[in-house]
Image (tube, rainbow over all chains, first blue to last red):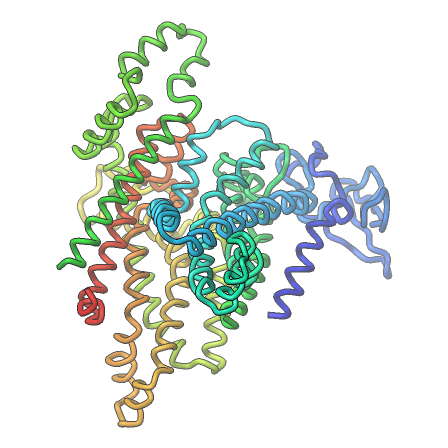
Length: 301
Length: 321
């Protein structure tokens, strides 16, 4: 569990520092190098260099140039994970694309949890009609298969929109659909919390409903929500990947792990250039880390 | 009986609610098939308006919903404008392909997951269990999408299995046995991806619930009474661990139509997935609604089946109701 947390922190930090770690901007095209394979890094003593395949010219890999961690001087190129069809550096795009995919997952999770907290706490705390209406609409939401609901809601919204709008739209849809599970869990906490002596005592002293919800119910729901977050974040990152892969999410030229994989959809291209699968592989350590943390948290409860 | 009747009524209520909400959403959606037509310079705005009126889109909401619901109950789900035909038969044809794929995969996944989970739960704390958990976690962390593409690439490179599609080009010319073999060979890859995706989820659940039952006092006392280990596992512990597994099985049944969308799209399997996606792109809401309603129907029916099975399997539920 500790190792998983360290791994996650390191991965998130790397993604956060994309602007420093990535050798190139995400949209810089090297038209002379379409589908270039990953650069081999050779060493002359301790000095790393890359060799140009065509000319045999050696370019030293230099650190801290132009405000970036590493790079080579201009005629030379450094593609750690190869390039795509437009000659864009996949390693750089992985880092920048990770920002988009992860941020979508994180913000959508925040939306889900916030909605779940508010709705679930009201349902459990007030009971009666509020509870019935909220739980029934939750059942309706859960009655449609998740991915199909996601796609259907996406289908009913405009298809051709800008990247920024698409980003916000994805967060709203993915997060908005997922309110039910956290709401049910929080409702359970609120139901049992409502009858606890210290809550009754506070009520006896004239505390308002809002105060009780804020000071007594919400803190108890914290653990439940944290566990839910570790379950939801990877699921939502995958949702972004799936939607962008299908052409319903983030569009070019802004990279996301999903729309980068779109190029790998033509399998005959992948046969020749397997490094196009890098964004799919990049997801795996994230999922493993979150899975391990979620398991650990669930065991502890 | 009251319990069963209640569950069925509840399912019908859910189905009605979802249909109403989906129809409302589709109705509120900006743009439809006709607005995409308007982009075509050869069709005038008046012609589009006339086509709208002819399709009955000017009637009030309740009337349109009623007409659509009646059509859905008849099984044709209204008229698909992109295909120029009733949506029902188009969708039904795709459903058969999807069910063939997901049915096979679900069956295989369960047949593997139950022994795996029981084996793993029985050896908790040993290196064997630790290894199996690590494998399952890794499988769980590999996205279906990636797995599908990798297996497809492997099929292309090795030539061992056909890459994509459901039948070969000379399908019509082959005999019955040849046809079966051909479909089976095409089925292997997408079904394999689905099995690898479902297996870790199922096996982890089996392990958890069997492990819980193994820890209970009745298992300890059965062991103390000298009941053979295998008999203890499969006759005493597994039935006691059944309830969560029945719910999970219901979910498996319920997602038969919806579990394979990405795999179908990547591997070119002619199921509901590609149809749904094409319909979204063409803004053909008739097909979108039909697919959503049918997959919802399956999910609700799967949950209902789980409730009924639980009623059969667990006397406590029977007594309570």
